[in-house]
Length: 160
Image 1 (cartoon, helix red, strand yellow):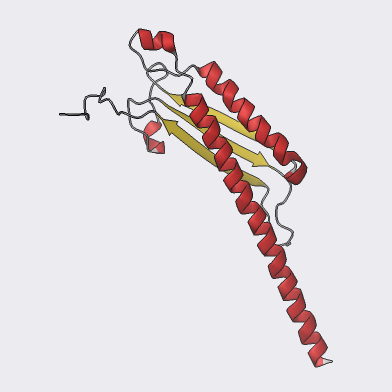
Image 2 (image 1 turned 60 degrees about the vertical axis):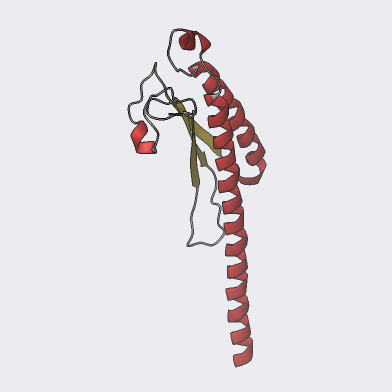
C-alpha cells in the first residue's frame, strides 16, 4: 500500500510538471508571436513617411497610415490567436517626429531628433495556465522602430 501511495504522489507530481511545462511553452510562443506582430506594426508604421512635411524640411510620419497599418497587423494577429486563446487585443501607437514632438521618447531609450513609431499590444484572454496556483490572463508586448542617422543630418555623426 505504501508503494501505491508513493507511486500516486509521484505520478501527480509528474503530471503537474508536464502540465506546467506545456502551458509555459505555449505562453512563451505567444510572447514571441506578439513581439513579432508589434515589431512588424512598428516597422511598417515608421515607413509611412510624410513626404509633404519632408518637402518643407520636417521629418514626420503620416499618423493615419501608420495607425491603419498597425491595425491591419494587430487585427490579423488577433484573428489568428482567437481560436487558440480567445480574448481580445488592445493596442496603441505612439509617434515621435518633428511635427508631434519628441516628448517622452527618452523613457523608451530613443534618440531625440530621429522619428520613431512605438506599438504596444495587450492581449486579454482566458487563463493561460491550467494549474490552479498560476493565473495569467493578460500578455503585453511592445516594439519601437526608429529611423537611423546614417547620413549625419543631425550634425553629431557622419564622415569627417
